[in-house]
Length: 69
Image 1 (cartoon, rainbow, N blue to C red):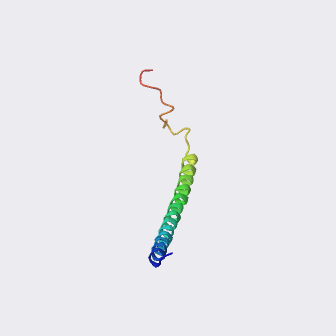
Image 2 (cartoon, rainbow, N blue to C red):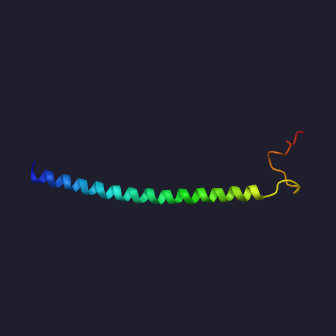
Image 3 (tube, rainbow, N blue to C red):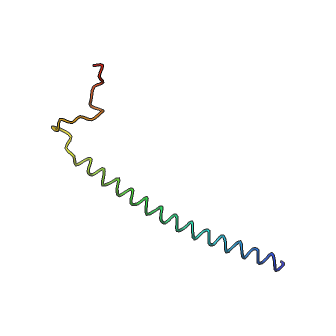
């Protein structure tokens, strides 16, 4: 193997290692964002389920009759 070819392969390997590190960092950031979003959704569901729906006089769009009735 020629010296130039060896240097080229080392350069490619170095570039790939750098790319893998950057991708790993990006995946870690996205995993944290996903975890935060899951926690936020759980909190929203708890708040929605904790709100009383009966006796407030407010009906949801599903409970309302269409205007032609």
